Length: 278
Image (cartoon, rainbow, N blue to C red; front, side):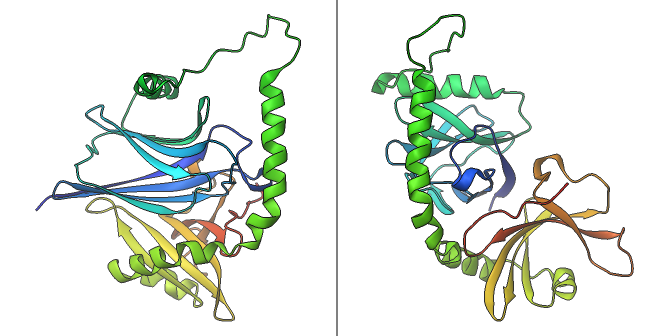
């Protein structure tokens, strides 16, 4: 029996594709067991689009490219692939694909591959199907109309019209089944339970010693926050990937600078990631 796991935290690369202008982020967890890969994707603050679609693109340690459709309204989802993804190095990118292919957010691990090189590889795969690579905008040429700005303004207008309807949806209902499955599969994080009595947390290991936590905080028996945490000892500076969206939660009020977790809090109603004032 063989088993391996990697966890990547996605960070925003291109603005204009989120709800109400909020920053995009997410977590991509890849587990490979007996030659079968399972990709768990949690996305934060993505808005819907009218045209085009979102995709998750992954390049692994063997330079194999995998593509998974996310549709027009991406949210947390799971993919099962009957092949072993090589987790020695991983590059994950969520792209928006229409007439162009645009990298929206990404994460990489143990690879020197640049985002530009990643996109070139994706474009090469798409060329046979008639999708052209991005054209470089030359700001030395005077045009009668800036088509990029026109298209961007149109997309933003469409998204603004959709925001009201999107925010009426309860985000927790979309991910409830996945969260319940995780709580059945993984052990509890007892230390956090003591620190937050109205919360439940689990430990998800991605190697023999390292893990992250996923949890749910309730208020009056209703979900208030979905949480993601990374165990750490207190430091003034948070992890670079989580800056602006995480805060340090000590495990003991008697030792505020001891062991604890860098925590991200996601609103269970809207799906918005709580912004932390720096």
